[in-house]
Structure formats: structure tokens, C-alpha cells
Length: 268
Length: 258
Image (cartoon, rainbow over all chains, first blue to last red; front, side, top):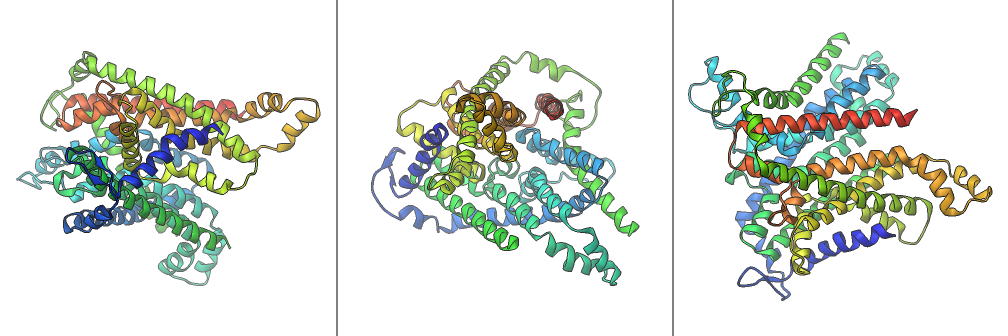
């Protein structure tokens, strides 16, 4: 199969190379010295880097939670709309996703920068007097990530809610369940596979994000993706950069494995 | 119940506002006469005129189109053959191959970028538009494959068998029966791969060399040198182009659906 050959040479071989080099050492002038050691993996535990992983995980988790809170009512509304409107709403959710990611991130730079639109609007109505600093902060990164990945949450949620049997929900209402208990004890358990799929689809790209923290985060809001780029292109410590990339990939693959485990369990 | 319904509708409209307002703001302010301020100071087209005289921008657009066309062609041929091969035959270790071919869809893009960079440096291939194209073809194979395979699974195998019973060779049956039935999915895959390639920044960022600046790389370097109304104008054009591509794919689907 020609596809397998192409992918073998231009994907699996390079990935294998990353794995091999993650055990080597940095040469004096930035190249690779072929030794075998676990030093790169041990170096990853440096508090300086631990802080970056922690920030990545925390920002990705926060992005997932915010997307879920925003996306659930939206997905529920779409799934219960008349069929014609469902198609229109889904299209409206997908369209921004087709717009270039850099452009969508730049839009938030334009809005959030200290003399930007957000500040101009707030100061013209007298709410603020001094410039507000939102751009180049974790908050800005969070906004950018939520903005970028919200559709990934809405689509699987919609698919799960659309399949949910209306009569089950009505039965719960008829039995005098409160709005909250209908949600917590009927709707949420029955749409769990969609919730998990949506959360993973948001969490995975968020934790490895590069563009959003690079443009909206500035130097103090580095995430793992930026650290890898920094190690490769600035410090030129390829073995260490490779070790970090491999750890990131392992994390992502574990997440996917968990998802498939949960999905098959729900299906059975 | 109606109160709940109304609450859901307002929440949904708020979401929509969140998704569209930033894009709308970009487009509106691409016509703003002020260079520095985010206050409206009158209508102008001067930022568009400045873009029109930016030769590096046109070179970048050309590079992007070239990479997108060539990588989409490669990915389509490989992706369609992989879809047919995996769906129509059974061999030991197939599940592993299935999973492996989907890997580019799930691994962090940064990881893919550094792996390719490392690979090209190690085999001493200079970074250029060729290496960018190879990278794009690699992440687009699964994109095409997934779309084509979904359609293939829904096709009745009896159609191809009937062609074989009537004396067609395996290739004739594929060429005259299966391929035409797959064409909507293939067109869908082509459009998707083309768009993904045009928009890709991260893999390109790591695999591009001097002189192989694509449009997203150019946009990135413009953004890095600071917010400016030219970027707003360029963004507005890109938004328009992607809307046109979506409209095109919708029309294609409708034509093919009949």
C-alpha cells in the first residue's frame, strides 16, 4: 500500500528518530552526540519546566471546562430545534472553524491589547481610566483556546443529545424531578460518551497548543508547545526538546486510550 | 418549560455572538482610517491598497497555492488507495495499521513539526517548499482516507460484484463502478485537504526554509511585528476566501447528492 510507505518514511521514521534522539545528548554546537542516557527525561523534572507543564495542564483543563459550560446549552438547544434549523445552526458553528487559526487568534490580539477595542469601548463609557492588561496573560490564552476549540466540544455533544430519547426526559419531568435533577440524573448520564468525546477533542489540542500561547500569552505564559519550539529552534537542544515532545505525545495517547476504554464500556 | 427554552436560546445566541463578533470586528476595522487607535476615524481602503502593492505577499500566496495543490494531489491518491485497501481486504495486523494511519489526526502538531524537521536535517535534505509539501501530504493522507472510507463503508459491495460477474476486470469494476460512486467523498476529501494545507502554520513553520514563505508564515511574521490595519485587511480577505470555499463545498455536495 503506497500510503503506508509514504507515512512510514515521512511520519513513523521521523517519530522514531525523535524517540531515539531523546536518549542522546546535545553536541557542543547544537548537534546531536550519540550517547545513551536518561538525562533528558530526568532534566524534565526541573521546577522551571514543571511549572510550564502545570500551566499547560491547568490551561487545557480550564479550556475544557469553559467549553463544556458554554457548549452544553448550545448543543442542547440545537439538538432540540426543528431539523431544518439544526443544519443551519451546525453550519454556523463550523464556519468560524474554517477561518484561518492565526486570523482568529489575531482578532483577540486586536480586541484585548492595552489600547485595543475592549479598552476603547470600556473607557469611552467611563468604566476604566487606565489601560487594562489582558493581552499577554493566562486569561488571554484561555480566551483564545476556548474560542479556537469550542466547535470541537459542541459537535460531539450535539450528536449525543440528538440521540437522547425525549420521552425519558419527559418521564423525569412527569415524576416531578426538578430541573437540576433532570439534568444531573437523566440528561448528563445518558450523554456521557458525547461529553467525554468533546472534552478530549478540546483537551488534546489545548494541551499541545502553540499558536495561541505564542501570540496571546507572551513570555510569562509559555506552554509545553512553546517550550518544545524554544528548545528546538532557540536553544537548539534537540535531545531535550525530543524528550519533552515524547512525554507530551505519551500523555495524549494515554488520553485517547482512556477514551476508547470508556467508549467500549458505555457501548456494552 | 418555556422559560427553560428561552434561557437555552439566549445562551445559544450568546455563543454565536462570541464566535462571530471577533471576526466581524476585524473586518469592520480593516476599513478604519486610523493606523494606531481602535477608535473609528472614518472609512478608508488604503490598507487594502497597501496590501495590493506588497510583492512578498503575492509570492507567499503563490507558494501556499503550489504547496496546497501538490500536497492535496499526493494525499488524495494515497488516501483513496489506503481507504480502498483497508476497507476491501483483510490482513493480519490490520487494526494496528488502521490506528497508525490515524496518528497524524491526534498527535500534537508541534510534535509532527519537530519530527519532520529532525528527519530532514538528519538525512541532509535542505528545507524548502519540497519539504513543506511532503509534510502537508503526510498529515493530509488520513484526512482524505477517513472521509473516503466512511463513504466506502456505506457502499453496497454487491455493485462491484455484479460488475465482476458481468465480466469486468477488477480494475474496470473499480474504475467504472466504485470510483464514480466515491466521487462525492473524494471531492469532499480534496476540499478538506486543500483547506487544511492552505491554513497550516505549525508543520510549515518547522519544515520551511529560506525563500519558502507561505501565506500563514507571512501572516505570522506580520502579526509578530505588531497589530496593524494591514493585517486586518488581509484577515478580512482570508475570511472572505474561506466563506467562498465553504459555499463551494456546499454547492458541490448538493450537486453530487442528487
